Amino acid sequence: MSFNIGLSGMRAASKDLNVTGNNIANAGTAGFKQSRAEFADVYASSVLGTGKNPQGSGVLLANVSQQFNQGNINYTQNALDLAINGNGFFQVSNNGALSYTRAGYFGTDKEGNLVDNFGYNLQGYSVDGNGNIQTGQVSDLKIQTASQEPKATTKVVQGFNLNSTDVQPLNTPFNPADPLSYNASTSTNIYDEQGNAHVMTQYFVKSATANTWQMNVLVDGRNPASPLPIPADTTVIPPTEARSGTEPAVTTLEFNPSGSLKSPTDGSVVLSDWKPAVRNSDGTWSLNNAAPADGLDVTIDMRGSTQYASAFAVNSVSQDGYTTGELAGLEISETGAIFARYTNGQSKVQGQIILANFANVQGLTPVGKTQWVQSFESGEPVRNPPGSGTLGSLQAGALEDSNVELSDQLVNLIVAQRNYQANAKTIETESAITQTIINLR
Image (cartoon, rainbow, N blue to C red; front, side, top):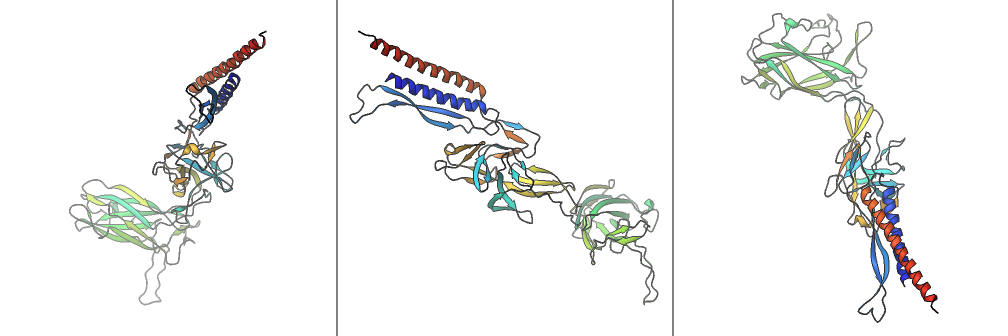
């Protein structure tokens, strides 16, 4: 019987060595979770029972449990390296076969799909044509690498201060080429439908009426709605005067005594029928071929503007147009949202990574490649964006290290080796006793 007991001990120690050796081998594997060999004693049983003083029959391997405690976060220089800080697994698909991993090595294939080192597709929520995340269905995530289309400016938001102590300019009438004919000016880039940039310049002229200013607006030095020269026409009644195309669009700004903007009442004016123009090589001007027949309307929102006794200053300015943009990079938020950054300074949501978790992660079946698949014991996966419920958050540009503690594993290795040797000694001793019995005469 001691032979069997010793053999069971050697088998158990051998399996312990296998588990420990596998842990040590994967100490540098990102997302790896160490395992632990768990043993139980063995007793013989019979229909009549074992009696008051049963003798043990050895040991067996009860379970190899996986330890899913958090590994250290190691920062990298790759924006698509992802680490989970907390609970959850990445869900990847191999032609529809789902598996789960903590190894965050991700990149893009030639078609823009987000894939791991084995070509498995990272899954999450896609976006619709308007950039809204579609949370109803999980699918393979894909990065759109095409250029971003330009967008014409429709709104400019400004906040500036006009000096209440300014006096009327020395020179009249207003002339953009004469700085003595206006008190202050500011320029803002705006964009047409083809993404061409145009300079909108506002000139502010103090009026004789208290708290009142005249704002003159030119785009590329031209009248926004009539940028082309118009000759005089005496054949019509009444005759029309010649226009140079450089006459500004004019509006009046009125401030309250407290310094806030009074008129226009909603704080905004509209440049109606803006027709973008381009300067030709011969010095003449022509309409940009992107200009629609009815022109573009650009709203200038000045609700944040004031008139105080301090120097003219532009405190804030923004506009909603942009030129064509090429994909410059990707950013991934803690909640898994994927943003594409373009060379025009814009960003666009490309999708959202989801995480999966299980009621019993110990029940997951390891299948290699630092991946697991669900089993009956694990239960069904619960999928949600990172950071929701009990799920952890994402850390982009980082990887989760293996949770193997080498010092502990080396101690386990020595203990398993000693156990193996001790059980071998049991067999050796039993063999010696048996030989003694055989030698009796």
